[in-house]
Length: 161
Image 1 (cartoon, rainbow, N blue to C red):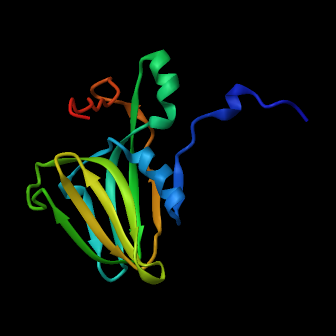
Image 2: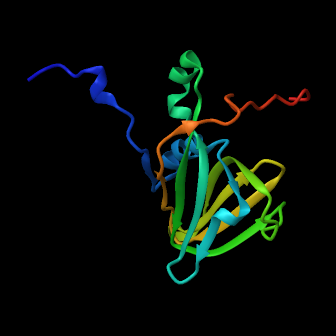
């Protein structure tokens, strides 16, 4: 038996599932500032799944990237299961050139475990999913790549706050 080595801790694809609101808070933090074109989301009504292909900022690697100066993104698949309905506001789903930016994901519980998953977008947009139960999964599907801007996403505070 030997001690763990730094080399043994190589980056692995992230795979996270949220089945309760505490899990969803962690998942929400991981997808903050993810971007995607409107064309990269789909609802499969028969399978009751809503999916989004995101370009996710790797917040989990932020401290190392600050030192090395090489911030990364990775393509990730966000899948919400048991979706009974989808609604959106604040953007046109038909504008295929539009790029959305995710601020957070939340859950409003209804009766018997049902409720609504809300994907809050920059610019006052929202995707609201009626769900039978909370079941959200996030999986990295590509290797990380250098963030095109080379910078950390920044949210200036409102002067009135």
